[in-house]
Image (cartoon, protein in one colour):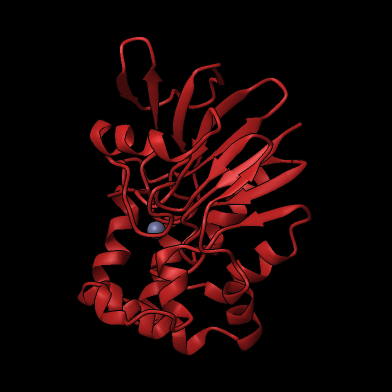
Length: 243
Ligand code: ZN
C-alpha cells in the first residue's frame, strides 16, 4: 500500500501537480494542512485536493485564517496581506471545504497526524530535538507525521537512551524503523530547507517505510503569477531559493 503524505501546499498549484505526477498511483492521500496562503492558486489547489479519493486532510494555521476563524493580526505583515487576498478570492464552496477540516490530530493506519504538533495541532512548530522530545509524550502511536515547519526532516527517539536525533532523510531512499519517530514530509509549495524542489513523502504502512521525495517544478511560472496577483514580493522571491 502506498500513501502520499504531503503538507503546506500553500496555493502553489504547479508544485502540487508536479508532486501528484511524480507520486503516481497511490491508495490514499494524507494532507497535513495549509492548502492555502502565500501562493497564487488557492482555488485550484483546494479543488484538486477535494477530488482525491481516500483523502485525509487536516486544517492548518493559514487555512484557519483564510476562512476567518482567527484574527489576521496573528500573522506578520506580509503573511497577513497574503491572507487578506486569499480570503477575497477563495470561492465559497472551497472555503466550505476548508471549514469542514478537523482542527485536531487524526490517527490513520496506526500513525498520528498533525499540522503543527500532537501537543498543539495547529500552531506549534517542531523544529528542534527539544520540541520533538516534549511532543513524544502527546501521541500513542509509534510514528507521528507533522508539517508546518516546511522542513523535510525526521526526529527519531532512542527510548533506551531517551535521546532524540534530528536528520534530513536521504531523498529517494526509504527508511524503515520500528522505533518511535516524528516525520515531516516538507512543504509542497514553499520549501524552507534551502532546496526549492517541492517536497513530499510516500508511506507504506505494511512495510513500515517512509520515503522522502523531491520534485522540480516551474518556479518562475509561479513567481510570474504571484507578481501578477500583487502578492508580497518576499514570498515570491523565496520560492527560487527554498527558504
Ligand atoms: Zn505552512
